[in-house]
Image 1 (tube, rainbow, N blue to C red):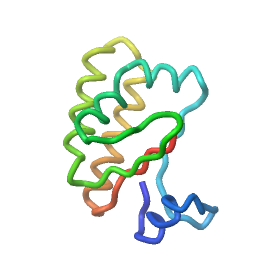
Image 2 (cartoon, helix red, strand yellow):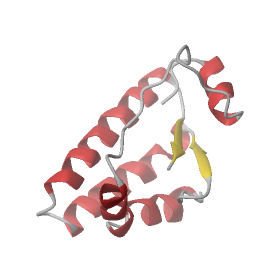
Image 3 (cartoon, rainbow, N blue to C red):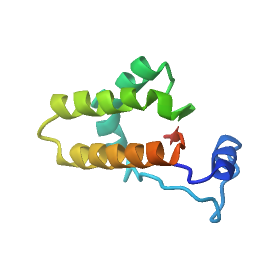
Length: 111
Protein backbone atom coordinates (compact mmCIF):
# COMPACT_ATOMS: atom_id res chain seq x y z
CA UNK A 1 0.00 0.00 0.00
CA UNK A 2 1.49 3.33 -0.99
CA UNK A 3 1.36 6.00 1.70
CA UNK A 4 1.55 9.02 -0.59
CA UNK A 5 0.58 10.00 -4.14
CA UNK A 6 4.30 10.00 -4.95
CA UNK A 7 4.55 6.39 -3.81
CA UNK A 8 1.63 5.47 -6.09
CA UNK A 9 3.50 7.01 -9.02
CA UNK A 10 6.74 5.26 -8.05
CA UNK A 11 5.02 1.88 -7.81
CA UNK A 12 3.28 2.32 -11.15
CA UNK A 13 6.56 3.36 -12.79
CA UNK A 14 8.43 0.50 -11.08
CA UNK A 15 10.81 3.10 -9.68
CA UNK A 16 10.82 2.12 -6.00
CA UNK A 17 13.71 2.67 -3.62
CA UNK A 18 14.24 2.69 0.15
CA UNK A 19 12.65 6.16 0.37
CA UNK A 20 9.36 5.08 -1.20
CA UNK A 21 6.73 5.16 1.53
CA UNK A 22 4.83 1.87 1.33
CA UNK A 23 3.49 -0.92 3.46
CA UNK A 24 3.93 -4.31 1.87
CA UNK A 25 2.84 -7.84 2.65
CA UNK A 26 5.70 -10.25 2.21
CA UNK A 27 5.08 -13.68 0.69
CA UNK A 28 7.75 -15.93 2.22
CA UNK A 29 8.49 -18.32 -0.63
CA UNK A 30 7.09 -20.16 -3.63
CA UNK A 31 5.19 -22.53 -1.37
CA UNK A 32 3.41 -19.64 0.34
CA UNK A 33 2.67 -18.05 -3.03
CA UNK A 34 1.24 -21.33 -4.33
CA UNK A 35 -1.01 -21.62 -1.26
CA UNK A 36 -2.27 -18.09 -1.84
CA UNK A 37 -2.83 -18.73 -5.52
CA UNK A 38 -4.62 -22.03 -4.94
CA UNK A 39 -6.83 -20.47 -2.26
CA UNK A 40 -8.74 -18.63 -4.98
CA UNK A 41 -8.07 -15.24 -3.37
CA UNK A 42 -6.70 -13.56 -6.48
CA UNK A 43 -9.25 -15.20 -8.77
CA UNK A 44 -12.05 -13.79 -6.61
CA UNK A 45 -10.47 -10.32 -6.48
CA UNK A 46 -10.03 -10.39 -10.26
CA UNK A 47 -13.62 -11.49 -10.81
CA UNK A 48 -15.13 -8.85 -8.55
CA UNK A 49 -12.81 -5.91 -9.24
CA UNK A 50 -12.34 -6.61 -12.96
CA UNK A 51 -8.56 -6.85 -12.51
CA UNK A 52 -5.82 -9.20 -13.69
CA UNK A 53 -3.73 -9.97 -10.62
CA UNK A 54 -1.33 -12.82 -11.36
CA UNK A 55 2.35 -13.61 -11.17
CA UNK A 56 3.05 -11.76 -14.45
CA UNK A 57 0.92 -8.64 -14.10
CA UNK A 58 0.86 -5.80 -11.61
CA UNK A 59 -2.48 -4.32 -10.72
CA UNK A 60 -3.69 -1.22 -8.89
CA UNK A 61 -6.98 -1.53 -7.01
CA UNK A 62 -8.56 1.74 -5.88
CA UNK A 63 -10.74 2.14 -2.78
CA UNK A 64 -13.94 2.02 -4.86
CA UNK A 65 -13.24 -1.70 -5.43
CA UNK A 66 -12.13 -2.65 -1.93
CA UNK A 67 -15.44 -4.39 -1.23
CA UNK A 68 -14.31 -7.01 -3.76
CA UNK A 69 -11.06 -7.55 -1.87
CA UNK A 70 -13.00 -7.98 1.37
CA UNK A 71 -15.40 -10.44 -0.29
CA UNK A 72 -12.46 -12.42 -1.72
CA UNK A 73 -10.82 -12.55 1.72
CA UNK A 74 -14.03 -13.96 3.20
CA UNK A 75 -14.41 -16.56 0.43
CA UNK A 76 -10.77 -17.68 0.69
CA UNK A 77 -11.00 -17.94 4.48
CA UNK A 78 -14.18 -20.03 4.35
CA UNK A 79 -12.77 -22.27 1.62
CA UNK A 80 -9.53 -22.93 3.50
CA UNK A 81 -10.41 -22.94 7.22
CA UNK A 82 -7.47 -25.08 8.38
CA UNK A 83 -4.66 -23.15 6.65
CA UNK A 84 -3.03 -21.00 9.36
CA UNK A 85 -0.49 -19.34 7.05
CA UNK A 86 -3.26 -18.32 4.68
CA UNK A 87 -5.39 -17.06 7.58
CA UNK A 88 -2.52 -14.85 8.73
CA UNK A 89 -2.02 -13.39 5.25
CA UNK A 90 -5.76 -12.79 4.83
CA UNK A 91 -5.86 -10.97 8.17
CA UNK A 92 -2.92 -8.76 7.12
CA UNK A 93 -4.52 -8.07 3.74
CA UNK A 94 -7.75 -7.05 5.48
CA UNK A 95 -5.86 -4.70 7.80
CA UNK A 96 -3.89 -3.12 4.95
CA UNK A 97 -7.09 -2.73 2.92
CA UNK A 98 -8.73 -0.92 5.83
CA UNK A 99 -5.71 1.35 6.24
CA UNK A 100 -5.57 2.10 2.51
CA UNK A 101 -9.25 3.03 2.59
CA UNK A 102 -8.68 5.37 5.55
CA UNK A 103 -5.85 7.05 3.64
CA UNK A 104 -7.69 7.11 0.31
CA UNK A 105 -4.82 5.15 -1.25
CA UNK A 106 -4.99 2.19 -3.63
CA UNK A 107 -3.54 -1.26 -3.12
CA UNK A 108 -0.88 -2.28 -5.61
CA UNK A 109 -0.53 -6.00 -6.25
CA UNK A 110 2.95 -7.00 -7.40
CA UNK A 111 3.32 -10.75 -7.11
